[in-house]
Image (cartoon, rainbow, N blue to C red; front, side, top):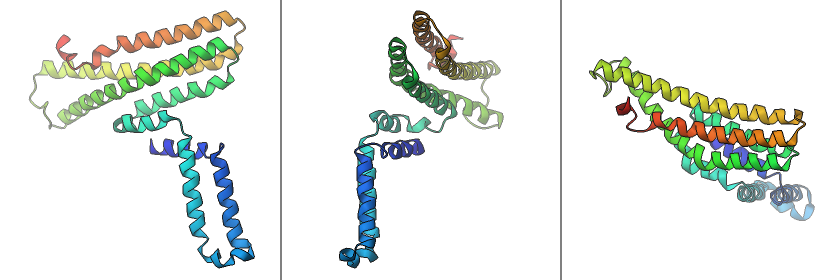
Length: 227
């Protein structure tokens, strides 16, 4: 997550007005090193260089989308989890594809999907991943003869293993659906019927929402008791 944030800041630094701060900083350092009137400061060139770099990064940081920083605050606990990284990559890929879409109705539908992912899926996914991680680790500890599940009844252990598998399948299914949405979106350029394309994007959004709700059961705290 930290690398993604740094990458976003550096990318923002290439856009105005941050890039002008960067250019001005480079020119300032060159002036200190090469202009005779500033020769007395040449030995300390690194000071204006450092000030220029900090100024450039500071301006670039203000140009980064707020969602990037929101991710750091909300998702630090799962930022390195493969499922979360996978979902985030596919969400960002959807956003990048918007600029390549020519049908306004499709653009709007994709933006709605991304908004839904940001407000519903990602926050909920973080909680689901944490619960799955705790359960999976408990079963790993049990297999090693340690942890709180040692001496639990075989029936309960078997139920937990089944639940862990169902959770894994649900997480895998989410990543698959997000991947399919990206694949389908790329394929839209081959479609000729605008109405059909708009209808398909609406269907994807609906199916993702339905799948998300349908798989919530296996991540609830009382899901074991309902087996």
